[in-house]
Length: 362
Image (tube, rainbow, N blue to C red; front, side, top):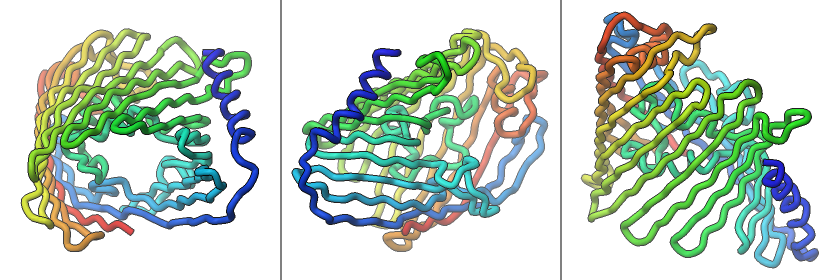
């Protein structure tokens, strides 16, 4: 770990010296964003047969606004930056307890790749979400089945104090990322590192990614990984993938496999649907209780479908429906995540939801 951190620091220090000293003062800055909200009904949200109707922020695709730009430095090199704020359309509050909680970075790019510094997405996020059958480049939705068992497969995918390197060579794109733990006396404590490779050629896309998070205190190291593929045939795109997570202390394992299909029915109407199979095993406990409650192994099946209708290039309406069937220890994870209180005295539960909303891009 000390060697990896030293290499990142050396690269950051030497790279500016390698750039041409002659610059060209050409720059541009762009304001962009997504505003998305929906009305959602969920049955049996807490495992005790209580239903809930609510206005949810970011029904499909997280609501955000951002600034991004670049400056031509000459010789094919650029300075780049991005600042991105997340917010709730239901209450107007800033998300993630930070003004630019989604992303905030600055760096340099050129034919050699891009090297950026700040709060950024790791490779697991950038590659893993690409194969979610219901993502379709809009972003995840409020009750995405990839949240089965809690938000665990992408937890920590925005990395603070990070250095990210990206490079594309023909059909292959590579990302390496490292997050400084910034703990006195240790370069390993609290640090994260990972990477991934994406291959895109013609109708085929394939990607793998890995991320490891070292604990700031204690001994629980997190290992997350994903593998996925998609293939385009005419107006249809097929998706298949698997995501896994391992927690070392206590030893707990999680996995979710999925398959799905997206179809562009007309230029305005897009339909997608998917099936997900979730499993957990080992010493699985609750996530958010002051004293973790043992839950043990379990599994779940989830199905979901989305219809998206574009009113224009920037505005669309969407309708989504999903059902999750949880068994064993997964009941406790599901009810804690969605209902706030883990239910441990029933063997199985079913949660069904439907959501309708609007999304605007600018």
